[in-house]
Image 1 (cartoon, one colour):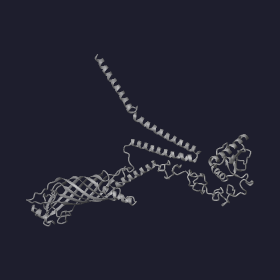
Image 2 (cartoon, helix red, strand yellow):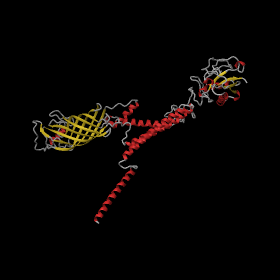
Image 3 (tube, helix red, strand yellow):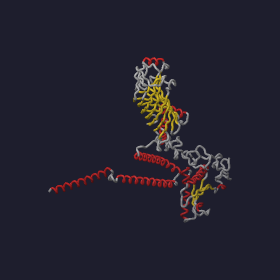
Amino acid sequence: MKVKTIFTAFLSIILVNSVSAQTQEEINKLLNGGSSSNETTEIQEEKVAKEKKAKEAAIKEEKVKSAKVVQTDKTKSEKEVKEEVKPSVAQQAIKTSSVSASSSNASSGSSSRSRSSIDVKPYRTWSVGLYGGLAHPLTDIRYKDWFGTLDPVNENQWSGGIKVTKMFDAAFGVQFRGSYNVLQGAFDSLVVHKEDREYLENAGLTEGVYFRNNVISSSLNFYWNISNTVFGTNRYIKSKAAGKSQKPRKFSMFMFTGLGGSWFDPHVMFLENRAPVDLANIDFKLDKTFEITVPMGFGAKFNLGKSTDLGFEYVINYVFTDKLDGFVYNHPGRIKNDLYTNLNMTLEFKLGGKKQSKDHIEWIQPVSKVYDELARLDDMERKLKKLTTDEDEDGVSDYFDTDTETEPGMVVDGSGKALDSDNDGVPDQKDLEPFSDKNAEVDEFGISLDDDMDGVPNHKDLEENTKKDAFVNFQGVSIDGKVGSGNSRGLSLPSIFFDTDQIHIKRDYEEELFMIAKDMLRLEDVNFLLTGHCDERGSDDYNMELGQRRADAVKDYLVENYGIDPNRIETLSKGKSEINSPRFNINRRVDVLIHEK
């Protein structure tokens, strides 16, 4: 019985674990979009690859469609093509914006550390420096207050140290400093200030003594680059006002202060014999000690290049004790605690790796960087505004529009210029002669100039100053006889040619038809005959019909486009009865003749 019970419990545990495992696997599938946790990464990578292939295929298909559209549009009128270019430009702009937005989203999704245009590489922020110079005490035992003396002992001793600076930005950082300082000061009856001498004599110091102290100090300081916060704006504005780029800065001022400590061991000796001092009435403090110190420094440095700076600094070190000179005395009217100063020359080495810019952040122009970025954003906003603005409402945004003062209703090309098919300087919608010859002189309505009013424009007229009402040929040369006389019978004007088995008038002959229409309008009392011809292929009946349809097509064109009275035009077909040329294309035509009814 017990064995059966144990076996049943064991089987139950196995089933529960199996169900739990299966349930957890299903949960993982649901959380990962139907995949288990082990399969998630592989499936996501496959999805990304498939999406990329789909996008490439869509782009390729779009290019093929665009090529087909361009090929098809070659048969359309120039006006239609230009009208279709405008939405294409707009669509392209929208498509570009969509692609940019998609790229931006993809980039932000893959990396949270996207950088702006000014952050291609981070600037260097670390530097290590060496410094050394003069050390001078401001203590009770001293000959002078600030500048010291060389006699009876030299109060201007030396110091040296190292500093490490980490900048958080162009103006502020933190700096560690460690230094070794030799301090020395003297007192005797020749002390410069009588008041000081009298005070110390009253305290029991009546003999000439001097002290010497070796001070080891370190501190952690707040560092402030003044030049990057105070002087940058004005330099930037001046350079921009002068229309010049701002010169790289070579000089920089700084300040620092912080908290640290000093370790020292003072020694006091007689000036006369250099023996250790032993005065019964004065308790000198000559033990080794450690005291809190507050340094306050000011300095300037010069940029020698990408890797080094040279500078100088003046530092006042405030020590929280009066034992720096070994003599404790509450001097009336003076600071009780001792101080010492440093006047140092500095040499700094700017550190950085391969992934960082060669420039150190202290030597950039932070104000100009910000202003330049703002100017770039302002320029971008201006361009976006132009991209979305269409002041002349011609359908082309101001960003692409080379003529922002197009008159309302004008049909324009992709650059926003009013269409001018014949390039005569008169827009098509104002041009009464939209297909003027190249280099033809035209009036304000686009009509070719005809000074002698003979119906032939100046650039084609071989006979200037033709007499009024003279009858001329298509070159402007006078022809004997009057209109309607026997001499003018059979005079031909330019012929219109057709493709095989076609009655459609090709655009190539719109100019000739315009010239014919001008003659018809000028010669109001003259009638015309349009004769249709065909090549020798095909039956007589078919060609007779085709010739008639061609003549009717030319008549309809002149009537519809130029308002010619249809009663002045007769049409006739000669089919293939008059073959004037061995070439098929020459025989497929409509001849225009002056006709007497």
